[in-house]
Length: 89
Image 1 (cartoon, rainbow, N blue to C red):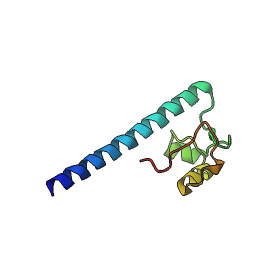
Image 2 (cartoon, one colour):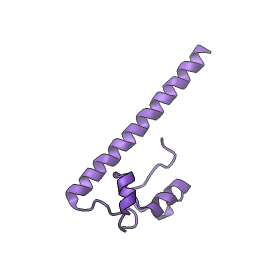
Image 3 (tube, one colour):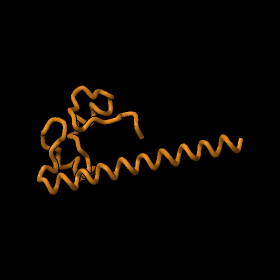
Image 4 (cartoon, helix red, strand yellow):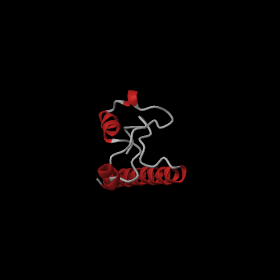
């Protein structure tokens, strides 16, 4: 039982680290976009990201339409270089 509990705790900790790492990458990308003058533009479709979305999730690389496609696992419309591992934490 103890080994199972430790394993679950370790998995939970790794999941948290993965989420924080992804958030940090997204924030760094948003800062780079600010420097380049492309902040607020969807990295997939090049459309403007809505103001309300940017207020809620200011580091988002996608407009709501493209984010919904990613959430569904439909990466056909997501163009390189911003390919996502939608199964990652």
